[in-house]
Image (cartoon, rainbow, N blue to C red; front, side, top):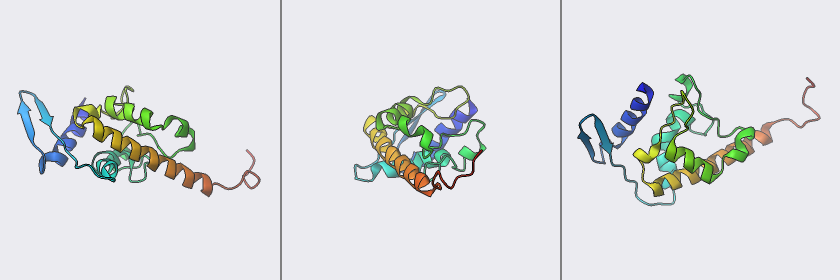
Length: 146
């Protein structure tokens, strides 16, 4: 519960300078706007996602390293089939749903078109990272036998 509050507070602080924040009782409503642009998804990722998922999507963000349940390494070849734009969009919108996970439902903070943009960017970032990792692995004939 505290971690969710931390992440929502982080979102509020990030949005504080340029976007309105209103308080109602014990709830804070943050209105976030990003101008439409070809790189809006990247801007949103760099604002909200890289803290946990890392600059390259490999799960090594400065907050992610300290979590008990580590963020998904989006660049891992084994998660590739799961990292479709639609799957990422659902997780961003609704949160991870895993007990103990810090991935909150961003639908509370981000409008749907922004969630779509960041999902498209994240899927591309993950695919690029997986491609680089697969190229870097030695050929099967050179790998040591277990």
